[in-house]
Length: 448
Ligand code: SF4
Image (cartoon, rainbow, N blue to C red):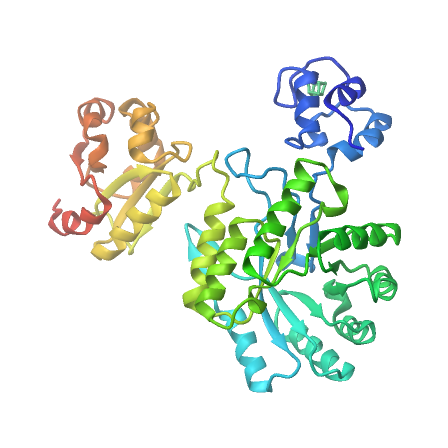
């Protein structure tokens, strides 16, 4: 049984030093019991107490890593039902399905799509993470060859799918060094799959028919020394699979029911033959609470919205995405180019820089640190005001890059123009558009 807040409190130093981010050890103990903080946030816990607190400190849903290196996927580790309570931790992995009965040309085309379909958005690269290699041929050597080909042609993490332990062993032989997810341990093959996973230090997916059987399977895998587990409730109807996701998350978090405290794997690919419907089902699991989502194929029109949805849902709602403060040169500006300034809220930066690019007028864009707030919010909060903008402009180095002294401020910060003329003697303050969409027309008219 996990420890209660009071039991944890008894093991803490009780100095109330506040270094963990809350003022008292009791508050820290309560947060730890609720899974809202990590034990490592307190630097003063004794080794003896640490050992006792391990269980309480572990996230209720175990984090599991699939693959190795930069493209390794970490799933699980979640501590809340709803992102507004804290945040969701590890975005679900998206997998493309490749079967050993497919023609070589189809396999090659899927591997190529896996490689090519990536997108840049708000400074981040969005892309899928996994290739699911599925056995349908009954031929171990064919499956091994396909696993080997996927390993050679892609740096994504790998899922090996078969019901046969011997065929899975052949697949693991081909890519054991990539630590693939072995799918699946069932009540019929549990011992063999547990041995395979233990010998190769690979994570395992457990598949059952229903949640009780699933809990029995994970308990047996734990007893066999396997802890890195991903769970599949076996449901292949939309409604039942959705219900299972919610029950699993809530059993692990609210009831602290350890046998279901693992990330899940779901298969929209087995719930419909309609690609668009499949994308809609996948979008449901991005929000509620898929750990790995296996799709029958990737196409840009369905993958991109899923990647953006995932980015939005797994962004910390308490911390706006921010761009680094500095001077951004857009379109090779020179000493006569316009100078604009904006806040460092990422969305603002990408809208403004995009509109400057559209204008085809080479420009300097000064991005000021406003703690990730948009222009209007930062202005209202006193973080984008004349007595902060002035020193920033002077220190930015822009005066060495242009020979004119004209600064275009956002229309939403027009009230700062008078104060800025005092803060920046010699500069002419020009009030730009309120909306990003009007920047191209404004810049085309801009003259020294
Ligand atoms: Fe207590 Fe440790 Fe937090 Fe200090 S850092 S208040 S000792 S829990």
